Length: 230
Image (tube, rainbow, N blue to C red; front, side, top):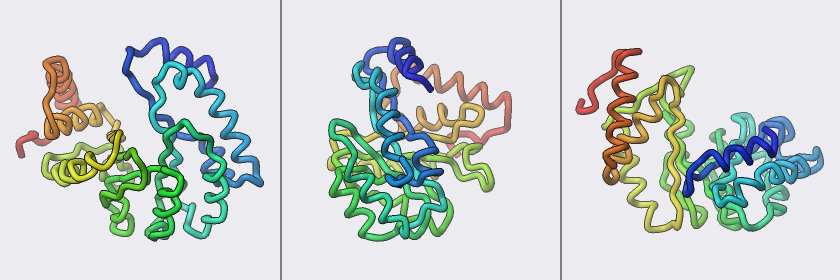
């Protein structure tokens, strides 16, 4: 994506709209945040691309999603990279390997005011990523789905979302910003679950309720889905 793309996104979205952006895989996956391999130089260029949405006050969190093979043994790479991160941005790191289930990893994020991403993790070895841990003055939650082999093609039930309501209520008093993203995007399922979850934690506007009804009707036309009340 070019800088012009972000200019267009900034102008096309309403006031108050916010983008959280994922750092390119060339930085997180290929160069694994290694300064020696030029990862930070690439990140500085990426920040230049993001300048328009920051200028328009539409930049939320900058997300570093680490690859599943990025283990705690790579600690020596991530620490100097985080040390160089410029101020004035909100950052989040998503761990995806069980070796990061250590206090040292959380302490590192706390030192830099970086959110440890909470994820709905059906895999037993990654359950720790669902714990309501706060490492910054903001928090970041991503719900990817639970379908084996293809997580994103999944519709959460009310029963599955209820524990996350409790976690959100626990986290909210501790942070200034709490962002929740549904990444189970296949066939519009993220739209449905996001609106349902908002209803569980508050109240929908009339416009949002109509959007929910429209999305549910669309999905029912594509696939058989369980009733939300079940």
